[in-house]
Length: 315
Length: 315
Image (cartoon, rainbow over all chains, first blue to last red; front, side, top):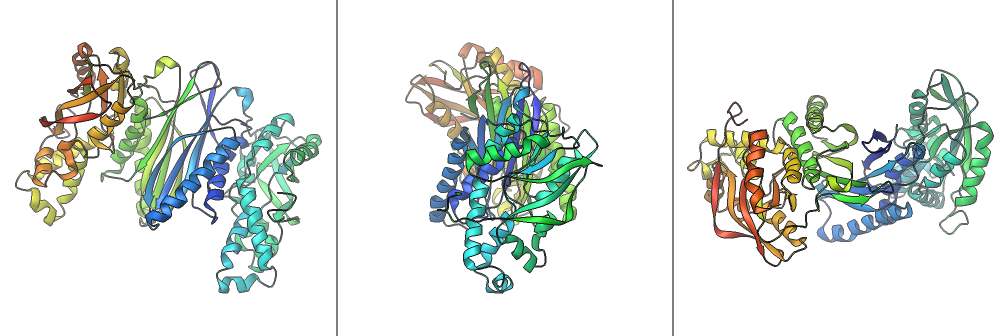
């Protein structure tokens, strides 16, 4: 499960709690704070929890930063984290900061729930479909953006993408990672989700397998469609399937929820979330009889998700 | 306050939560795990909370460790952490591990409480006395132990302490840091404590000042007695008041609780904790009228706390 559930001594309540920390991956400290917060909260949202009672922030500052850099950057990161927590209806009440050569950033998200406030992930049945709420390709986009300053890397991909493509994909990835999965968590209740996980470091296939493994029924997940930030599939191919983006092994940061929904509800779920947030979701696969594993078909359909610029309508 | 208190949506309950992480400071990985856990829990105990519902563990492994070292050491640290959590009647349900050049280790402690289960720290009144539940000097002991391998440092202190003194002090410090403040938290309720804090990185005076600052009444704390692990005061003096041990500025790790108690209850508190655990506590100061600060008198009485070896009766 993405978060731990601990029964409490008090009237049927449970403590739902998760922690995560990682290394910075975008160059905008405010967005980095938001992404970190969204990423921590995502584990709660994957359990269908919509309200986070409390957050803590965990920070290792790099000792390679000057005092000036630290005094400027750290408060901006903290503001991003705090703003995202407030957007989530939560609050940041504490945390801890230490020094280490490599900067790390993360947090703790905690909520106290009645049993109807969370959704166990293990109830998918044959005939369900799988919905994904954010496009794949954040790792490729972040790396490609860094390659703009590394001619030897850039030369390998410049035949398939323009610098502008990469900058737009990076923006799209950054805003996608900072987006909360909270509406998706709310709609999991409305559309009777049978279980979900969030797609992060193990990539789509890794997390799909983790979700398949815990199912009560003898089911398997088959994925047919891969929604990918525009041009990132081309970059991955040009680099010899770099990161395994089309094999589902490319790590994502603060990715979408992968949700098993009753077939007849899935389209309505996707329509509803798009109406509320202006972002597409996709039906990417099905639940069939199986041995609790997940696979991607041989030639999955790649759905190019337009990387509108920041002023584009979809933002 | 040492822990955050968040009112919950459910029937008068509050979420009490704290996080802490730091660098390893003893060479026994099992004890290091226990110390880390005791140190995190201590923030709850300082609030009079006796039961921790859930713990998470936070780890940065050093990339300078070999795979072999990592595979041996990390599980032992985790076992120490887990054993201490179980000793506290809690459990470890999750956590996160990353890699960084410097190892850090820490955790999150969370509990859900009714209002009578925690004690706000701000109710001390003139006439209260201050009790400390562990001796000072852990930082000096840990450093002196490291100096055994550094002749140029060792030469400065070998006139005042023997190698055996230092090894015993180090053992005493290690077991003291690994000891839970849980019994002290329980007895805070029994003896009507007016507030407490735990003594850690800011040293005795720093934490006494933090506690004094939040008092509702116009009080001040005056500290007359300094219980110090045997010989550590001599080392500090021999090194020109190193770390400011006798000024109350020497950092402690997983130190004791500093508790404001009604004068007539303090002796019974100390007697009770010694009866239950076999460890002394000390009345170290008084609460008088003041401007919400703390001070140590000019020539405090240094109480040498014997550093029995591991097999000694006090262990």
